[in-house]
Amino acid sequence: MPELPEVEVLVRHLRPLLRGKTIRAVQVRRAKVVSPNSPRDLTRMLTGAKFKSVRRRGKYLLFGLRSRPLRMEFILLGHLGMTGRMYLARKGGPLPKHAAVVLSLGRGDFIYEDTRYFGRLTLDLSAVEKLGPEPLTGAFQAAAFARQLKKSRQPIKVKLLDQSLVAGVGNIYASEALFRAGISPRRPANRLTLREAEKLRAGIRLVLAEAIRCGSTIPLNFAPGKTDGLFYFGRAAGGLDYYQERLLVYDRAGQPCARCGSVIRRLVQASRSTFFCPRCQKT
DNA sequence: CACCATGTTCCTTG
DNA sequence: CCAAGGAACATGGT
Image 1 (tube, rainbow, N blue to C red):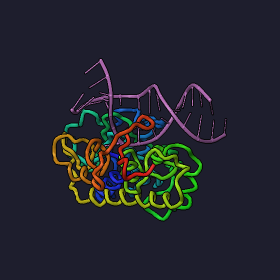
Image 2 (spheres, helix red, strand yellow; image 1 turned 45 degrees about the vertical axis):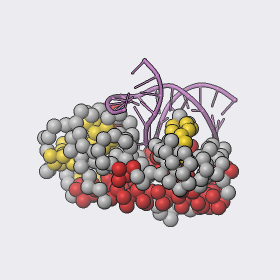
Image 3 (tube, rainbow, N blue to C red; image 1 turned 90 degrees about the vertical axis):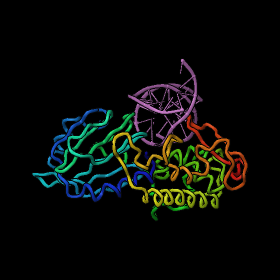
Image 4 (cartoon, rainbow, N blue to C red; image 1 turned 60 degrees about the vertical axis):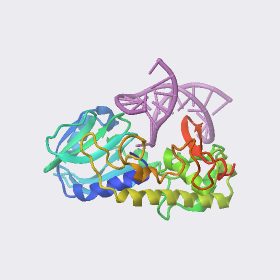
């Protein structure tokens, strides 16, 4: 479920549920997701700790905790990878097949499940230090953005996935932002004009903010086998159309462009799908 | 069997 | 040293 908007919606959902809760027990069922920590070290650190805050940086979740005996503040870092979910469930309920970590809280269990185990729940914060500016704050400035783009000949779509350029844009919203800005995904990053960099910055902020607004109105349902409403991907069964209809180009190859009616095309860049309108987006 | 999938990191090559 | 490209990670859906 994870690009910046989905993580933001999740953070807002979890914040009031976790604040003040104490971790009674820790169960690491898949060691890989806590690396480079060991399950033992993580368990020792978390057991007895209390949640003080839940925040987001890029696609990462930052759980602020205070350890029991020593009152030491520290941060637990979460990332959902491609298929991760985090939620509270009834205590002792049936665990999902791919439960990676379970934190027992007084009243319920905090569950991190991840089908592909690409995500993380760890004390290692090094990944966050490499992130670029938060796109929805004043830290994301057009001048610096344009300057960074000048240094790369990569196609702009590929460059947008670089988390050190700007944090939180993923494969779906990269295509969406370029469509809003009217710029071809193939354009070399260093060939954007300052004006275009400004339009792209605005496009990024627009698609991310819209998605958060949209996602915030959806009641989340983490029951086993259910969609949580944050899963925008998948023309699969069920009514996730709410998200899908906000996506103007992603996964719409062969369909008419909402703005001009041309056929939306798909191409592969850096072995990932890109979707765009050949008429609205200038090469 | 084939290909596709919301992400990041590591390795190789130039 | 850097930029860029590709494979790897792991599982499931169509």
